[in-house]
Image 1: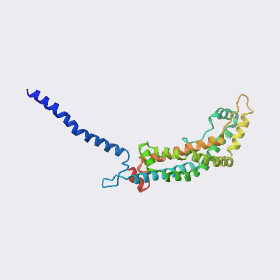
Image 2: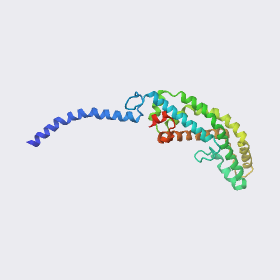
Image 3: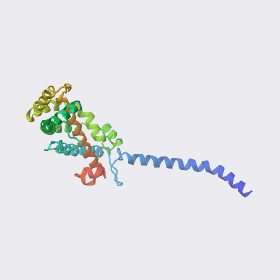
Image 4: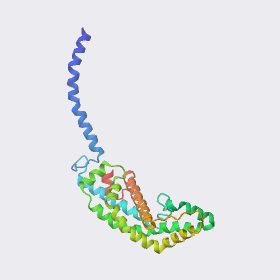
Length: 248
């Protein structure tokens, strides 16, 4: 009898308990989701949460610091050539030609061609700064919310989506001029002319200006992304009070 009575009580009370605790779990889930999104949209209060303006300012600051350091890293001597992550190699279409020419005793010429492409990229890199700054200034609340929901390179991806075409158009004539200054065009012509004298080697046509420009930008955005990751993960990389406030 007692066991039967307890079963009836359980059948009556269990649904009631579920009704009472379900809203509490829903509230807990909402709190966790809010925290995961960087607590955007809330006002600054005694609990230390941040309002949306502060979050946007922090993201802009992170991008400003990240782009400044990224550009500085690639624009220095050996910024591209000395970094295996972004070093510009002989175009894939010319790899076979490069191997044959190296084996034929022209290693120095091939190496010089490769070096000159990297020097051109290093020389052009500082021109990206102005375009980056303009894009960062135009970041909206919607942009910030998307970045908060993204991964640890979301800000860099946003910047790339907003600036890539413009930087590519700006970079290309600068790269072309830099390539003339450091000899890329001449070295490229010498290699292709030499290759044409070797039987069985097909002549390969490469838009060398476009190739170096695209590779230079790929490397630049990769390094900006690395800086963003550092700011998000390494407290020592948060060099301003605003960064420490938003990313702590």
